[in-house]
Structure formats: C-alpha cells, structure tokens
Length: 203
Image (cartoon, rainbow, N blue to C red):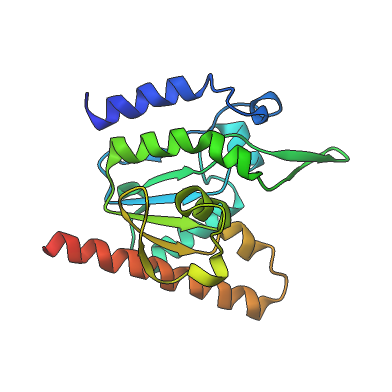
C-alpha cells in the first residue's frame, strides 16, 4: 500500500477513535495532512476551535503564524506533513466560548498510536516538535521546551527531531518586543530543520 493510501486508511480509522474521552466533546477527529512522502513532519499539540470545525490541522491563527514562519524560513508547507500529537480538541466552556485546555499525559499516550502510524507511513527524515505536548509525545513526559528547543536530537521514534515553540504560545505573548523575539526563535529553529533537509538532499 502506498503512503497516501495508508494515510487515508488511517484517517478513516482515526475518525472512530475512542481511546480517550476527548472524542465525546470534539466535533471530529482532526488527522494530519500534507505530502505523503514529506521529508519534514511538523507536529503540534492538538486542534484548536477552527481546526475542530474544519477538520484540518493548523488552519486557525496559530496556523497562520506558522505559515509566516515557514515562509521566512524558506520551507514550503505543501512539501511538509502537518499533524498534531492529539487529534481531538480539548476545551472547557467560558460563557459561549470554547477555550483550549492542555491535554493530559494519558490523552497524549492514548493518541500516540496515530502519531506512530503516521511516522511509519511517511518515514520523514526530520520532525519538528511544536511545543511541549508534541515533545512529550515524541520524547516522553519529562520533555521541556525550555531545555530542549533549538537543537537536533535523535528521537525514540526514529527520525531526527528539532523542538521549538508552539505558534499558539507566541500568540499569547502580549508585549510586542517579546512576541517578535519568540517568533524569531521559531524561525531559527525551523531553519535548523531546513538545513538538515537540504544536507540530506545533497547527500
């Protein structure tokens, strides 16, 4: 079975996933999307509200910021595969709004089967962990972005990995100078992934 066919089969199966309680409140499973033979795989935390409604990863404000960073870096998103560590939107009510709530480790662990299956189908050479939840899904519960971002590491799941900030975390920074600095860190970390992919292509 081709990687594209494998991913489509996984997507259909994931729509019926009840491995944790998050499916009960989510609109739908939000599976990954992108190039089935991508060299770079971007892993985020979980879908946000826009993603939950549209069924696609990184289409909301955080996705728009990620697109900006990728453009600055020179990475073509259409040549990547983009997914999340957790495939359902975890939220809590605040009036009429649905506010993001960080997934628990048990929910990360329950969803890890889909992340591993995506990695096995695509076989990327480099993965980028966007934020702490993605890092915990790849490296385990002791992962910390502050300790591990900005350098290449060998991941337990096979590919080399670079960890960086999640775009949503950058959006939550209110001070303009600090937000710009955080955005530059994201770009610098993505540059590391890009350089690794270019080195592999030349090799």
